[in-house]
Length: 290
Ligand SMILES: NC(=O)c1ccc[n+]([C@@H]2O[C@H](COP(=O)([O-])OP(=O)(O)OC[C@H]3O[C@@H](n4cnc5c(N)ncnc54)[C@H](OP(=O)(O)O)[C@@H]3O)[C@@H](O)[C@H]2O)c1
Image (cartoon, rainbow, N blue to C red):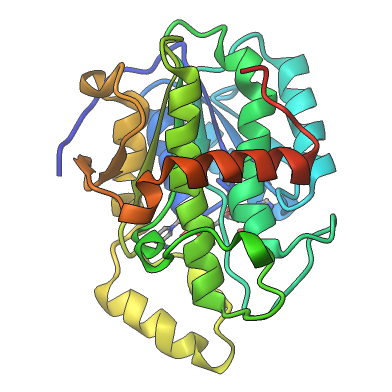
């Protein structure tokens, strides 16, 4: 995998879901390179621990943390408001938060959890923070998707919440396809503005993502332990897209192992991307000024 050690002194980066896992290791490395990192999570104890580790290693004010439940649209809005109040500019936004849920669960807004957390939070946080990103001379948006998106043949518009055929992996794959469609549609809408947006697959990573498998949890965790990458390795493509000079100006692409890759045929369907965009507007009540 390509190694890049670009100095990020003076850059401010927000990473959603960065109290642990791939998001934490991404924040840690960006801080190591000089960036100021904004840790966000819904868990006070873990966010504080992540913040303490980064500041202990790199000095105070290298990290700050904010709490928000990304499945709640009000909390995403409040978080974005706090960031806009506390910062003049944002250089890098990494939408990384994600999860999967063994059974149908409604979010605080009554929306199926996987779609609310994995897709709508990316749509909403990016939209709210766009004005701050536009103040950066070279802003980058990075959306952490997954090769699981290849398993989704399209967006299920007739039952977006999987009320009729919920299955954990299918719903997760569907949300990860939404990440890629969102990335490509946003890149089209931002074309010519200098703001770039790319999606990525981090690899099969031994993180806490695989904790919701009911009786199969120990088996899945064992397989991740045996065959998965470390979280440090899993963070490399996010770090690369956030920092490498060679991807400055590159937008609307899908990456894995720090290389551009083809995403699934369904992800290139522009009419699906436009329809998903309209649906996201409707489900959040938020319209981008684009
Ligand atoms: N692991 C893999 O093999 C793999 C493969 C492909 C793609 N991905 C993608 O990589 C991204 C990161 O996953 P990961 O493996 O690092 O997962 P992880 O270890 O479970 O970490 C997820 C992070 O998100 C936070 N989070 C979860 N739900 C949240 C909520 N409702 N509100 C706020 N924060 C929340 C978690 O905080 P707490 O710890 O405090 O709950 C944690 O910091 C996800 O988008 C995932 O889909 C992972």
